Image 1: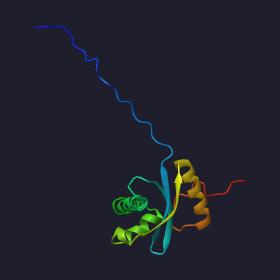
Image 2: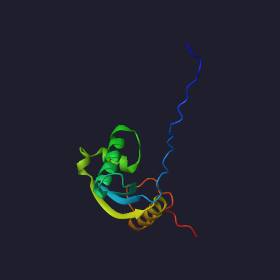
Image 3: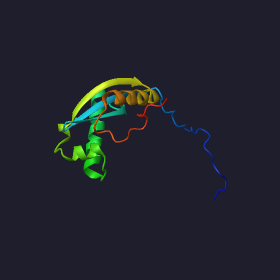
Image 4: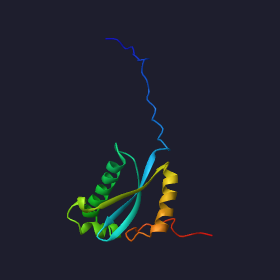
Length: 125
């Protein structure tokens, strides 16, 4: 029996890939039962519309499964299918920070009725 220790010198260590900061983001509007919601999501699917549909489906799922008392969730619970959600794409913006800035601007202009989280909406001097 041998007591020697063998080491593999051909091992490659993978480093975590740096997360992209210039990814496309989509500013979208969901219309539900006469109300509207403005949101932003990353383009994660092959097309812009598929990405927004996936995000709308997540909103719908959370509304049905979680007990959130947010305006959007309350409105979505009244629907029988996620297909009843009307989806509009407002803009595609490069970069997360820029997309969130633009989303706030659009919320100020449009005044959506179903947005509960309105951080950044108050105008500051």
